[in-house]
Length: 227
Image (cartoon, rainbow, N blue to C red; front, side, top):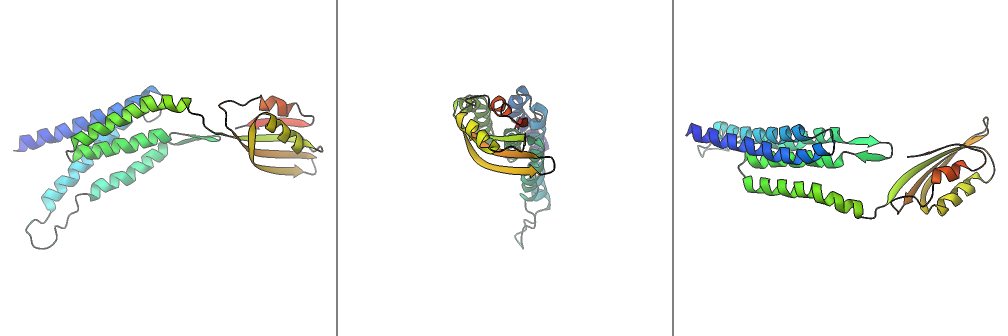
């Protein structure tokens, strides 16, 4: 009986490793920090935690029928869900005005779920979820590229404190077909300079004009930056 149980355990661990590695393979190809090995280990570790949870329940549970069982088989596995959140947060990177790594963090979360599923012997859901995740990562990315999406941009302008600068910048933004969402102005009286910061939105993939060059061409503008 022991060899059968060992064989079942090995099957669970191997399947969890393979399925987790499949999801990680796509991330590895796209050069993400959490790739092939990370997803494999997340799925494998989640599977082992689940196996341990079940074994602890079987070994230490009170099955005499007198009083409560006393052991919760889902307690250890539940901590995997919490713990994977910290690992996923580490995969998220902020780059200026954009955020990267959300998909990788979601993949780690799915890999953990696959490991848990394999740990309790639910192989079919684990395989189906792996296939769905793998297909979505490969195919839906192409769909996303074709979709029209709003682009949010931060425009920062340093200029001499001349009259009408704000109106000139706003006219250029209107010509470049960007929508002004928010703006902030900081004026330095000693230096006789002014700093503008705009939050704008573009509904096109690319700006209709070279916003930086046009704003930089305004008399008195010293520096322009877009994020």
